[in-house]
Amino acid sequence: MTVCLLLLSVVALTAAVPAPRALVRAGWPDREPVVALWVWQCLVATVLLCCLTALLLGAAAVFGTVRAQLFAPAPAAVTAAYDLSAAPPWAAALTLLLACGAAWTTAMLARELVEARRRRVRARAHLRERAPELPAGLGKPARGPLLVLEDEYPDAWWMPGSPPQLVVTTGALHRLTDHQLNAVLTHERGHARARHDWLLHLSTALATGFPRVPLFAHFCDQTHRLVELAADDTASRRWGHLTTALALIELNQHRGVLSCASSHRLLGERVDRLLEPPPRLGRRDRALTTTAAALVPLLPLLIAFAPGLTALN
Image (cartoon, rainbow, N blue to C red; front, side, top):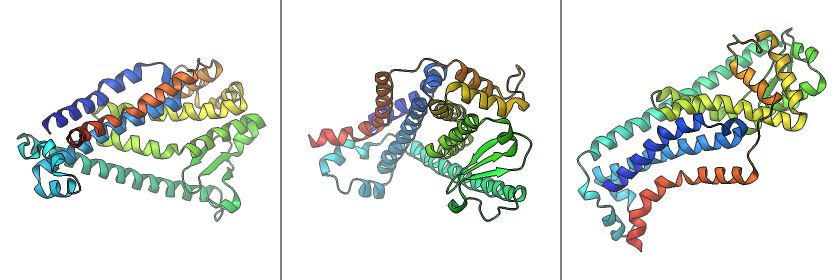
């Protein structure tokens, strides 16, 4: 069991520290944001699986009741292969630490979901105040998912929910052409269809709960960037890169998006990326990257099951 715990620790530390730093420095995620999002999720899943499997093995070694329940359906040879009776002295401390981490992670996720729901309720109440003529239609499929607000500033956004609510102001309707408006709405629908809100909640909860873990901090920052790039690609594939870029400029020009001193640096990067699309990865490279990333979370499972599989053979 000691070897399993050490290997799980090595895999978790590798996925949590050097791997995310290397991924942040890489240039291809900006070209393939969807693939990059998948890679980030696989790295997070790897760390969480390492912690979970280490917690289960440690608890089985420290507590006889857990061991009996965990290995109840397994043959005696499998239980003997893990050598749980000879657990190292630090197994109890590691198990306690991992149990506290699991409880803290659960609490952070629950807190983020509760806060997100409160923000959504407040936002919908604010929309009812700004659109009093449609108080009963918000979020109801019978009235459609698109809500138009009377506002001179051009803007458009989406609100997660069931179903998601697309909101556009009259300022955007006046300023944007038909194709530009369609590009903006396609961008927002791309967020809704990909359920980017859940990914943002997960990354925010992990970064809030473990701010000193490089993986979770980078995961939060990169997720907020990559979901916007992915939605831009969704819009540009249908309506063109130039149309989508012009729509972004028209929507954000009053915010100083093209200013060098702009605090909305991501908007400027998105416009530059659309005006000069970077070279994309080939299908083979995308498939290889996606497959390799999907195999990484299997490492903790292979490490955990290796002694048992060896005993059965």
